[in-house]
Image (cartoon, rainbow, N blue to C red; front, side, top):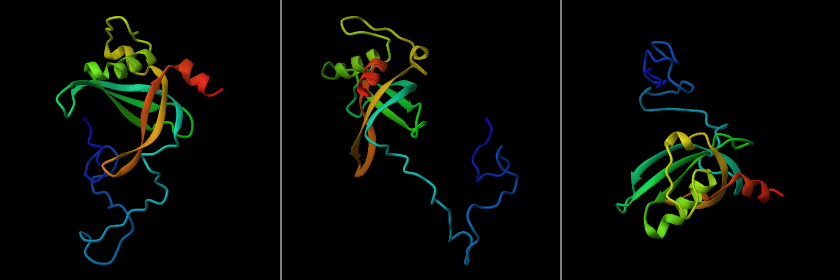
Length: 159
C-alpha cells in the first residue's frame, strides 16, 4: 500500500524531502505553524433537506449498549454537496427494527413482513434518498440523516 501521508518522506504524493506546509514563520520551526484554511468548508454540515444518496459502505457492528447493528455510510451523489458522507446506525433490537426496515426498503433489498437476506454487494453504490437535519453530537452541531427514503419518495418530496 502506498504511503499517502503528505508529511512522510517518500510517499506517492511528495518528493523525498517535502517542504513543510504553510508559510515560513519566525521562531523555532517545531513551535510555530501556519496553514491557510480560508477556503475550507465545514465538513459536518449541509443545509437541511432531502438529497439523493448512495450507500458506500455497510458493516455489522455492536452498539455502545451491546446490541448488534448495521452501520451504513451514505454519500450525497449530486449537487453542491456531492461527496458529503453521513452514517446511519440501525440496531437489531425489537424496538429499533423499524429503522432497519426503513433502510432496506429504501435501498430496494427487502420489505416488511418477510425475512430479508442481502449481500454487501447488493447495497454498495445503490441509490436512495436521505432526509438530512441538524443535530447536536458531543456539543457540535452537524448534519445527520434523520430518515432514509426511496427514490420515489425523494422525487415526490421535490414536487
